[in-house]
Amino acid sequence: LSQFVISHAHAQSTSPSPARPDKIMTLDELRACMMLNRANETAAAEITQEQQNFVRDQAVVKFDQAEMTRTTDENRARLASLTAERDAMSAIVSELESRALTMKTDDEKAAHEADRVKLIEKNRQHQQSVESFNAAQQVQRGRVDALNARIDAINGRNKTINDRVEPQQKQVIAWKEQCGSRRFREEDEISIKKELAAVK
Image 1 (cartoon, rainbow, N blue to C red):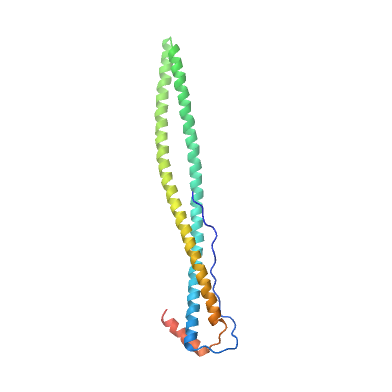
Image 2: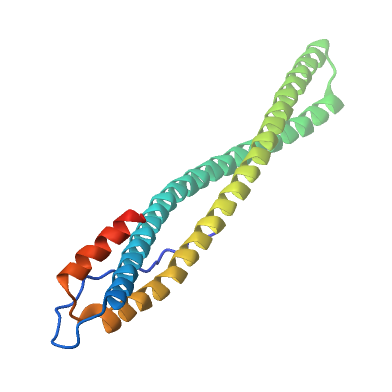
């Protein structure tokens, strides 16, 4: 079976840094900073949720993988049993053939015929078991293929999540550089919050 890509990065968000004395932001500058911060927080929340979903789905697939391994081991043991049964019947065939060469009495011939009939029935049952085993193996192969497809998909999701983390972290850094230490008017912030609330 395929193996998992276990590691994954974590998204980060941030709050405004303490202001330092410098030029007060204009209304447009503050609006841009607040929108960037909101976008960063939204992206961080989405990435975190995707990471949590990934961990959840990964656990399910790992459980299914363990179950698949258990079933494969059981099938391997079943195959060994069927092989041993086949070999035992082959030995009986050889023994019956040897006995047939030395039979003289009616009792010996009757016993030989009874053993031959028993072997025919045993072989019929064995063939049924082999057919059942082969059908189960076919189902198992389909389940393995489906599980491997799920593993590939979940590894692809993990890469997609990781590919989003670095750009989002760069956006957080950009917000810190552009906005984190800038002063602004409280009334401007209140006004912009109302604007942003209206377009949610």
